[in-house]
Image (cartoon, rainbow, N blue to C red; front, side, top):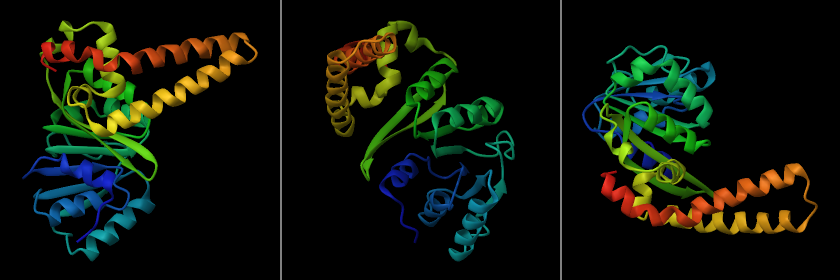
Length: 247
């Protein structure tokens, strides 16, 4: 059986049971292979925009004797996927801006799935903000530390009511977008470690900038860092607002 990394295993754990998975940017095809081998899903579509990774995925699928359960498709995002064809869509291991491009261009297809499992490597705040503003609700979150890096991930489902966010202020929304509403609510231990390290890095950088020459660009950066520190230091004080809103 294929062995997944800590990050990939956490992503795979979020996939619902019994459905069809579409793995966008599949690379080696490890997640669909692992989930079919575990009998957690009934079938999968492994997709990638580049022929090289898709060929590697096809070789691994063949080696696992799963050709009857997993097909490969060359696809720019979800362009080769039909609406309603997948119950779960995994988009993991890529930058947040690219992920937002995929979610925007493939809006109809993504909205047709029962769940999205997302693991952006950057611009996490923008991804959470997109979900919040496009009628998605984050119903599960996790964060792992592997090889010196922190990896947050989330499961989102369609929620056209949008009512919960009307009950919180802009500062609470910003903190949820930055750190993750469920990670904050649950006091996730890896998030706590991340926030401690972030606070140490930001305070050190702020001290260095304030001690040096104060150009206009430096002053702007100082203000940005102070704002980041504010969110870091106040994040857990919004727990009451999060719980009262039903997040």
